Image (cartoon, rainbow, N blue to C red):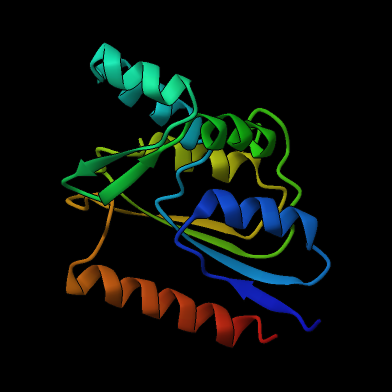
Length: 162
């Protein structure tokens, strides 16, 4: 396998993979990384459901929730519980030594922007930048947001060719 960059929109999965393949990792660009998001999200949404739906989920059924900001979200208990095996402890060093760029909106209602600061501090690499968009929501999908993403990726590829 050749060296590679991770530009995954799931920062949590990128970190898990990045730590496992760190010798081959050449750089990482994360978009509002939702670290350890699945289980707490499941618990919050589960608590809002009527008791009959809660029982179905506890019995192993799945439930789809329609979310305005993210479309349909699957609620399945065993999936949420399995996600805990891959949680990243931000109080310990995250063993990634390649360059990392994190983009995050300060108006993100899904993932607190403070988590990106914690992640920046936890990553071992000295080459980590966090870029905040003052009016940016979780998706960061406005043309200027996409331009910042593409410019950041372009700069990383030029500065650290694989």
